[in-house]
Image 1 (cartoon, rainbow, N blue to C red):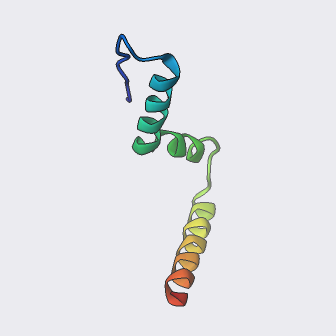
Image 2: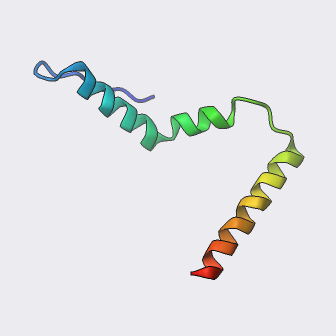
Length: 62
């Protein structure tokens, strides 16, 4: 769980920006999007295979 302590001389927008950055680094939003819908095991395998193919294709062209 990410938390941010707001200092006396800090405005809310700045604290909110720090909180969003902490959440992004912790991977909370990407994890939330990943678990939004149930993914069948066959769909998961297909997605991972496609990601591996894309990654392999990118590394070969470099």
